[in-house]
Image 1 (cartoon, rainbow, N blue to C red):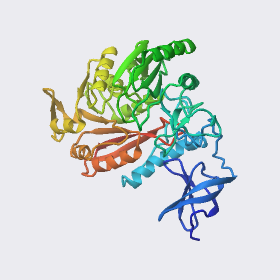
Image 2 (cartoon, rainbow, N blue to C red; image 1 turned 180 degrees about the vertical axis):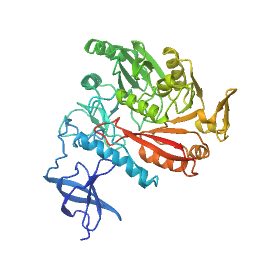
Image 3 (tube, rainbow, N blue to C red; image 1 turned 45 degrees about the vertical axis):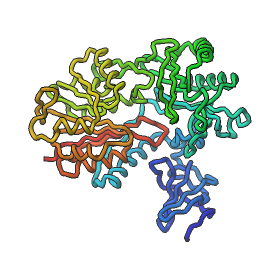
Image 4 (cartoon, rainbow, N blue to C red; image 1 turned 135 degrees about the vertical axis):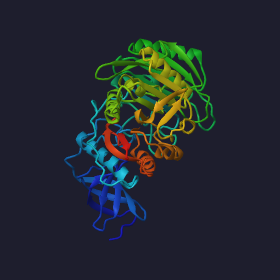
Length: 482
């Protein structure tokens, strides 16, 4: 039977996509994607869109619930785009994420006979994020479950596929309950005062973003209000009430962003109270490392899982005291600091100057002397460091034996530049460890790195940094093939 738009059908959901949509296959093998469905559900669907190779459908009714279905905790589930797997039992979430990794390496990377270990579960499946970013908007999404009749003033999270629509977030189970209370307090304060919201059309207005950062170990809390300009009296009034109502907040920042793009950043930063930063720890089996996190520093968003990722990287790399590690995309130095006790030398390379400065500070605060951090474009760094030499590598006036050099890569979600992959494909280090939050770009890059036959995949370990979402972190070990 040929399906057309608006056709209705009863079907069983067979699996789930990497974006959290249920997948149904008809008797003829045609694939239909549907939101809010779970593998094992028997559902009634209405076709919304038909393409050559697949269709998209809306869920009309669940005729029989899957044993894998879980009851979502959050009132915003199905509207907010943050937690698309909240309706799936967590044990199945982990299996799905391992399959997402396997599928990426088979279909995008072209690798056969890939062994993917079961994803390492998060210590906490809710309330695990140490950073959340919320947006102000006059383009409020009207949600029947909440307060749709109130003023068009929103502070919350983006609606998927809508550029400016913001859902007022009353509760969120990704960060702490305290975080939700701070969001609600902030919205009420500024809405009652008729404070303007920054407009992406006129590029004027005051309120832009609210970022809340919370430390897992130290319990430090930073509130960072990002505005279009600094308005001393408004900020002073808000700060006084924030401090009174939430004494747990250890520092309050007002960052001013004059950029037209809707990106949560700051051109100027005013520390209203507290130190202007928070501290967090990362623990190994033997040590406790302390990190200073400034308002816009990158730090892994799930502290406990970051420890598992870094421990996995250490085990995969088989680090020894005579090894030198090049930590490419070293950020604020968290991986470099973590592995410093296992090796002779760590050289971190990073393009963002503020991150390099933070990395150097983090090495000093932990009394680490074998880490060196360089501000550089990674592609240029690889070119001028002559990584293709066979026996030795000269760097900083010193000569390193190639057999004792190992590489750790932790690039942005977009992955590596193709030229970086090609350069690495011509090297012959004993180990390359590639950490990624995007298995698709990771598989694409590793395909290029392995194409010359110098490397092959040794081990692969997904680590669930983001429960209730379809995102998965993955650690891959490449070893020298010859």
